[in-house]
Image (cartoon, rainbow, N blue to C red; front, side):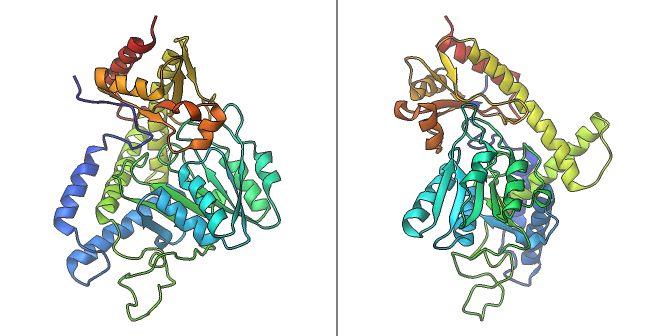
Length: 407
């Protein structure tokens, strides 16, 4: 019997691939020094690994530009703060949505109050998808950017990124895409879509550790830095360097996290080669294509689990699933409520009686719960299976749900 049955992968994927653990440990023991801060061999090796990770992530997200424009941050929230604040000025307007995480919602409200930047939050339909006509109709003369949450951490709905990208291009607007819930599950080609800034976090679908995230900045885009400090480059200057990544990376970067992402990217590539052989897919050594083979396999695996869970929940008469995500535009996140039981009660019982880890509450996405009618009752229970969810996990979850809801 497992100690914990984990169904909270939308918060952070767990466990990680074994190579992530082992490489982080070995690299930090052997080469855990500041990259680019010295001419000695250890610093040079740390910088080599860091730059190689930038290159792999650029390829992973379909970005063919300078790998130095892959910027490392603390997490996706950190990245979004850098991007939105660094690309807007007083008097600008931004279009975003009501399905955003607080990583965008709180930025929008603070900037409206403190920086004279206005925001329009377009609604989603009953299923959890934006209507791209609403995006276009929200554009004003002073609109500077569109900020889009690619996939919902509550409903699992994947928004029509391609159509939004076309609107942004037609109106000469910057497109900032939050991939916190879609990276590693939905292939994204930044160059083809014309994304200005793509933000990511390491600890979810990229299978890296916490404390590492990033943004990729298109070559024709320049972000104003909002923090300043040491870079190891042109130290005599009293101002932040203009070159990337140093312009946006003040201070020591989170090297253990970079090492974790490095190992995870190699794991994606190896998994892609395995699926290439098993499924007789077109041969390639290109990192992006191999990773896309892995992404398709991971997403299919997770969605098989989710559809089974969804069928169980629909069989309980007192349970309601939020939204109506479509199979062709969905990641493996599902939230539900039940009659006469709070989300917190359900989560606590599953944990205490069955060692099942789920997430109860508002999931840092309050507008989704306001629109779903669940904000005033404590939110919902979210179940998010992962790539490493197995038969035992599923059996234990079914037993726990039956214990709560079966007649």
